Length: 353
Image (cartoon, rainbow, N blue to C red):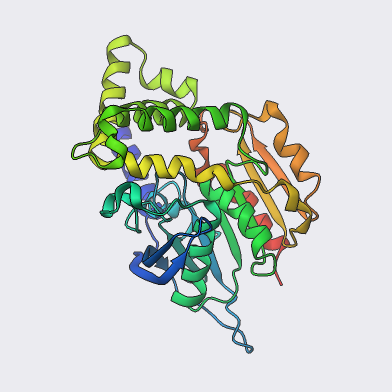
């Protein structure tokens, strides 16, 4: 009887977490997109998902749009899951899709958007974060007719995009929420692991200058590094308490990674962070901003003090560092909405017009 009740409660919780509208997918094509490098792509495809409908005020300004951007090598699909969408997009939840117009794009070089593996390989334009944000802006304004955002938020690389949005388009949004990111140029260990992967791929004879016919062995090294950085040591130990189980877990992750990844796509995504440096413009940010990091994040460790230092220069900014617990997942805590959705609700209240 107890087992039956437990199963019923688990099923009820699962169903409750799934009660949000199905995303509608589409593609926006930016014509003659010029990159910061000077290169041009005749047709830049940006794939996206939307939930809900835009609502305009009497002056025609969209008041309910929410932009959510993803992390390096990810896609917008990573948000359509119970512990993110299931906690945020349902009726009565912080980003209720019956009230908000939620836009979740795949960044340049990621997901179903234009990327090197489509055919250009290493001849694909060398995009950076500024290009990725510009493409998101064009998607909203030209593709979806959104002239204002209620909220811009993102995780990891998407968190860094949020800092770029805050400075390039300071009057475009009512609120900002970067997660798992720092408001400063990538340096130290964060720069080093990216440089390592770049060097390993570019130095692989089987990479062949990007014109390989089969995935080069260096793609495996990228998978190893991303697995290592994406969670915390406690969770890894709990999931893999023996030598054999660790090998099994790592092999399973790597097998899926190698099936779904491309060396040029990973290389470009890793190298795109080279133009990220928001420090000089932090004082220009106008909208209320809440930065959220976690104490067990290997990529953005709190002991560096970089978040605190940067936030002192943000006029209307606050930050939180989520304490380590059995619910945090290291860097991956950014998509566990239960950890921070109360803070999101507070941000929306503080920034309400």
